[in-house]
Structures are given as C-alpha cells and as structure tokens.
Image 1: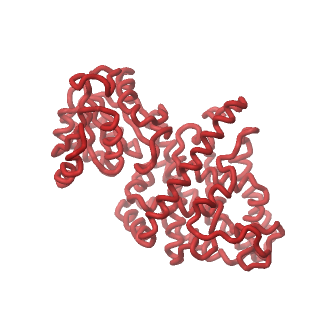
Image 2: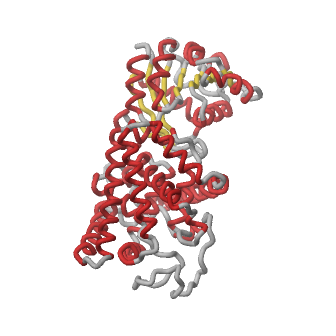
Length: 484
C-alpha cells in the first residue's frame, strides 16, 4: 500500500492515484476539494453516456482526468470512492469491483451502509482494503467542521491513516463508527428529520398555498420550517429515498412519526370538541415527551437557538408589526397568554417529532454531539426552543385545542405524513420519486431565494453554535458525549 503519511506536497510520483466513481453533486464536491488541495492524480468517471460532459466540464481543471468507465478508474487508482446512490451500489460494485487495483483502499459515499457493506464484501477482491466514509451534509454545505464518518471495516490501521490524510483537505470533523452504528445514527439524525420536512412540503402543496405569503406562518420557528423544507425539495429525490427505504431502522422511525402525528391530532380534535379527558391526555402526552427528551438537559448549557429574532432575519415572508393589536384576527382569540408578533399555532410537526423520539427512546442530544447534520441540528434547536419555553409550548397546546384556523392545515399534514409513511413501507423508489417530484414542482421558482436564505440561516446558526461551545468550554461546562 502507498505511504499512509503521503500529502499533497509530496512529489507527484509519490502521490496516490485517486479514483471517484460517480460524479453527481457529492462526487464533484470531493473532486473539487481534492484538486484544490494539490492532489495531482485524480481519475473520475460517471455513466459512459456522460463521459463527454465530464471531459468538457473538467477541460481546464488541473489534476482531474475523466475516464470512460469504472473499470479504467478501478484498475488505475490506489484509493477508490464509489459515490453512487444506495439503490444502485450493488450493481455498480458488481460491475467494477473485480477491476480493483491490487491492495487499493476502497470507500463508499452512500447514505445507507448495509447495502454498501454487502456489495463490497461480495464483489471486491480479498486484498482490497475497505475504509468507507460518509459526509453528513449536502454538497452545498461548506464541509469545514461538519461530521465526516470514517468506517475501518476490512483494513489495517495504516489504511485508515491514509484515508484521514487524503480527506483532511475537507477540514471536516472525523467520526469513527462501524457500518451498523452508522445506519443507526443516520436513521436517528436524518431519516425522520427529512421525513418531517417532506411531509410539510406535501401538505402545503395539497393546500395549494405558500404559507409564508399569507401571513399565517411567518417569522421565528416558522422561518426554519419553511427554509429547510424548500432546501430539501431543491435537492434530488434520491438524496433522501435510499436513506428512508433501504435503512430498516429508518422505516421504524418514519412509521412512528406518522403515528405520533395522527394520535396527537385526534387528541386535539377531541379536546377541542369539549372532552376534558382528551384535553388532559394531550397535555400529559406533550409534557411526557418534553420530560423524556429534554428533561435531563445539562444545567448551564445554552440552547441551540438563542432567539426567534435570529431566525427572523431569514424569513421569506413579511413579519407582523412588533407591537400588534391583540384584537387582530392574526392572533388567537382563545389564548390567555400575552399577545405576540408570532401567530400561535399547534406546531404539530414539532410535537410529533418529540413524541416520536420519546416513544422510540431516541436521545437526540447524544447524536448532536456525535454526528449531527446541519438540518438535524436546526430542527432539534427549533424543537428545543419550543419545548423549553413554557409560554410557547402552552400557547401551542392552547391553539391546538381551541383555534380552528389551522385545523385544515394540520389535517393535510397528518394525511401527508401517513402517505409518505406508506410510500416508504412499500419500498418503491419509483413511487418515492413521483411523490417527491410532484411536490417539488409546486415550489419551482422559489428555490434560488430560499436556498440563499437557507444557507445564510444555517451559517448563522452554526457560527452561534461554535461560539456557544467555546463559551461553555471556557466556563468548564462538559461537552455532550454519547455517555451523557
């Protein structure tokens, strides 16, 4: 095997040949950072039909050589990364795996590792070293400081050192897991989180409304919901399909989220219709979820979101006046809480998320410290902001029970959640694609604006989070670990 301590400053002849099979958005991201770091021998390929496009796209890019297929890449490369969809990993490795160069290190950039592991073990030569990886963020997110999972599955320690040095140009934070641990963590941090936003988008589509344009869901928590939903639908469907369909643990969580949304909505309806018993059940269930998920939150730790005003800067819609008329129809007429510029609603998507975590025994703050994606970090921050604020949570429960203006929206949300859950349970990628693309088409034309605001919002929250961690370190507050 090549020198594990090799670097971009090493002579060209001493550098490894890097091979990337699959040049979608993530493959191109890796090619960009590896090339800019100074690695001088990078071979890439995609489908043979896309070879001419690769030649054109990289004609003026130093160090990157498009090749006709994966055989050419596999035979010539010391490090080979399969950056293909989890749905196709078995087929692609079966085709190109036997051509793997002697003693090469092989990795996969799939979001679900069970099919990848099976394909590698089945089709790679026994001399190939398997050190897999997964950047837990999308191609549009700056990888600096983001979690990058490394999996030393079938390789000596020096092979892991080699991969660490090779990918250090991303400046990501390494997280060391097994294949099994990876799929559990990604199910907990990504699958059900993506599912919540997919459901929101479908519900808005079925309502034929852009809620931020109607003054109904604007500012604060709603800003995060809207921006992250549009961010997800601006990507390709396959980014989320494999994670949901091929990961058995993800299916369990998605089913529970739909169940939680349905049961909470039924309690809201029954309580709002005068059943005091159902009112008590709803309040107790929400409080149980709060205590189960947030009850052991470390004393002295600052929240992920410091204020709703931070989010207001990135709102797509116009915010109400700072000092509104309490009699205005945009505010609840049943709440006994002080009026706010944020219109109360049930926040069913967040209540269902925390209820789902509680029922499955998921401890989200453990995963936040371990391998959180930007979207998971923000969604957890929004849920924390709601559940740890007695006034906000009380207002949400009050509105859920007695306000009727959002009942139709909550109904659409429940129907969408059940529909997406059934879609995943069928295991059909084609059905998933059709459902995703139908919703995506409704938001066409809004992605550029939302993408810019969403990126700025994520960056602002990440900077706030880094500052928070620095302040807590100075104060001696322990950093969360998986043993917390």
